[in-house]
Length: 372
Image 1 (cartoon, rainbow, N blue to C red):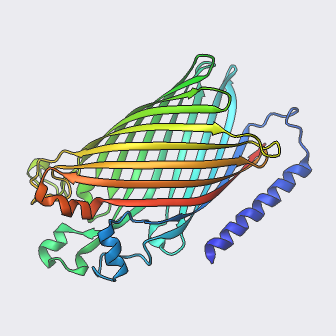
Image 2 (tube, one colour):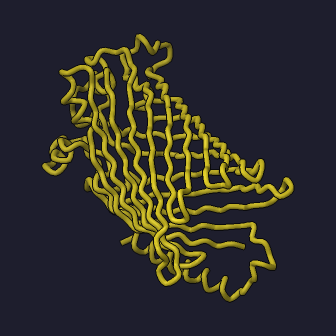
Image 3 (cartoon, rainbow, N blue to C red):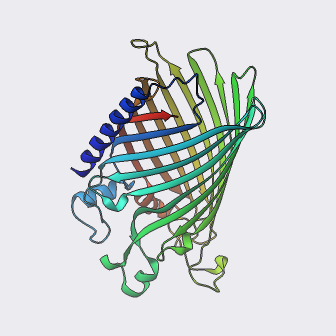
């Protein structure tokens, strides 16, 4: 299989680089290592790649709803590749400046339509020994959600298989955080801000939006072996709500996905006893999100968003094991779910069928660090 070949090449590359750097025999005390390259690969099973409700999972299994499904299977084996390059230098006295660039790609074994990639560049700067900030820009050129009915095509051709069109978007993300250490660096407080722009394909331009996110997260070390954290994020999304020039959003007959959301975060990290003098730890993070859609459209005109509110829960569990200073492996389990409701009782079943889902991901990861 192609993905297996890529994994084999990746592991051989790590072995080769590891031996080359060992033969070089450089003493890190004699030469500062300003550059770092992190090579990462995660391979995981995803139980529901398009986040379908039980209704549509059954329809897919029964080969119903021709035109809706453009996948070979609803689950998949995914390989996530990542490359991060950072350069650290003390430009302003003893204060560190770090420049970074990240490339990432998710490759699906059976559903190439879901493949996607991302690019991220960042600048991190220490302001004092306990205060720092970072600015980053990330870009996703194309991300496929799933096929939906295009309302404009339905108007002319009805609910036929040919009126299903791919729902895809590209995304810009400008982010900033400010971080402060407190109480002998046992407490870390980070404030977030992000400005995001979503650009959808030609069938769904009414969903183009400008999003803002504000947040804070507090990390607390309770002991040598135990850390906890809590956080809160508030986000708004202002959807365009029109797909033709000259239209007015309030009077448009297009979907209006404008919404706001609250996200609550809690996490714990436990450092476990060393195994053969090697470090290992386990972490657990939970996120609960409430999302409220604010369109004034009646549900007959915009059944996907009128009176809708979502409850999202996500749980992330990780076990990390440091094989060496340069090599770490991890095992992880993620569970994601959404329950959707609406103030329009007659629309409750429809909205749940379209937006409810549960999903889990189970996998292994490797990261190799090269410093020079």
